[in-house]
Image: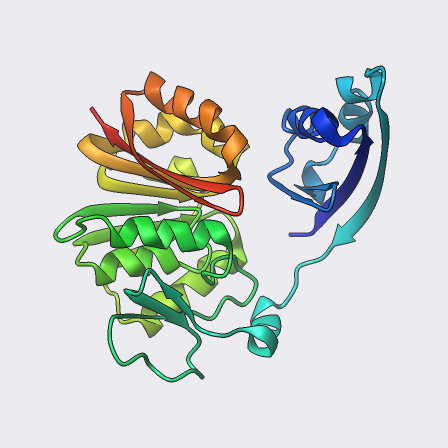
Length: 276
């Protein structure tokens, strides 16, 4: 799947950049980053509508100067990039995420990951925090769902924490194939990998539901995720910035969830909720 990257500069930047992100969030942009005063927004090329983009209220704002550049981002061979630059990641002193060509750790959980064209090596702040949440959760004998699994790293961590059954799902075909291979490499037969989104849940319910996706998708499918969590179970989400916490918390509360733990890393957030 090819993406379009929109790099926006807004003057004045405060609160212009946050207003710009709010406007773009009404369209199928699924990832945002903000570096050195530039807002970068990513959207699948097949989902982009120039008419909808031109119709955003953003362009009618008074008192702001806005410019942007568009770059096409093709699928990349993340495995090749990873082998060039990757070093093992240690999470909370309890787990090591490494490639097969790295030596095994002397102790702790050992997770083998080859990302290929999928997301989830532990280097990104959201993946690191989600793994930390899994490590902090009693998974023994539990049923777990990893929605938007990417490489399958969260599903694998849950399985190695003793989960009885794990469903790992991703809409992307590359992620689906990659997750299957990583699950096999980690000898986790209790993980079932499927291709698809919330529709694959059916009537299944889980003790722990993991979703490291993005703000828009989380809000859009919160009702589906909530239905799939058993009473007393946990919903753990990331893929959004700390200013988005209020919107995530509000939507989760509508479906009977109470926040029990929050992690933050470089303005990224990962929230854990318990179903009442």
